[in-house]
Length: 466
Image 1 (tube, rainbow, N blue to C red):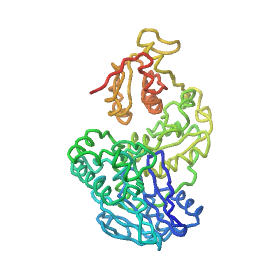
Image 2: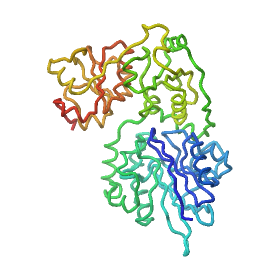
Image 3: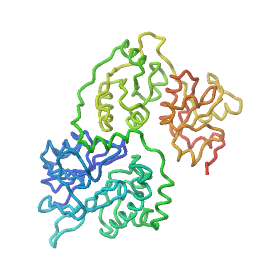
Image 4: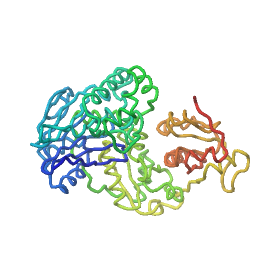
């Protein structure tokens, strides 16, 4: 049987894990912490997991590799140079691992994303020997880009970028054009220098499309470092947990909180997060809560915004939504929410005065308000607040807007000028989160629930930071 590679997608974090099998045994690459998904894949295929591989010590999520290896009895392959505090099978550049009579792994040192990063070439047996089916590249060679090189500190970013260039060239020289490329990052992950330009790729395609294989080393380094934006603050905690050896997850239901307890938790400065869609939040929500809907990358923004370790309570329409949020949060090391409540906003309020609405509009209304024609029911646009990331702002922004990236807003609320605030992002998701923070601080706010590409069409002047 030809090798079969199954993708285990974690779209909320922009990552992929893989399960590759020959119909009898399987290897797993860079598993997320909720390993039941991987075990379901293996069970559906009727294969036994014999090897679990880490391409690197991850910075964007807590790994499930150690737990998966313990449960399945698989060998756990981790770079020998990484100083971990658990038992593993140490591997280094040049090692070969026979998985079965039809599958073999070759370990390739590909530093760049981290100093000890490894890629794994998957060979399948043919009548005349071995044929490379593809390569698991982790945070090295991605689709149209590479993994970022500054996660170990800016002082290492330049050196690692040079390593990244050399590693990508090494893979391109080592493998045939038809070999598949299977990266972990690049699908929305902040571990990627930029985002993937395709859903799948080969070495041959990367030679044509990827700047790392088209630019000289110095040019690649300059371009890559210039394009890097901020990355989530919680990354600082991921590598520490992964080196220590993450504990198994606990996804059992969280303690329920009534209206009185919710009020008490907010009074004590804890985070109470509303997981409903932003339109439901805008219609009616519990004052003091923060909007981070499950329809977006909730865990990424929550982990970035909070003070690490603060108790978190989850509000949702159904118990399943709470369970889904728990699953997302354990992936970034937020193991147990403090409490949860489900139902409608009215059920979460100790009295009707705790309920609040959030006004929403669009860029057409903003353009009218800036011209002095304020739509009925809305305040004047005293302040236009852009909460997108810096690279988005530099590419294009509304003339006269104030820029504070969403992750910076909790510490910079005092920097928002006086007056009614119309807040926008790229679609409305981050803007609603920002608006909830502003409203909690007593500000009058309007969410622009619209895509940024409509701003210019609405008649608003846009400029580039360049």
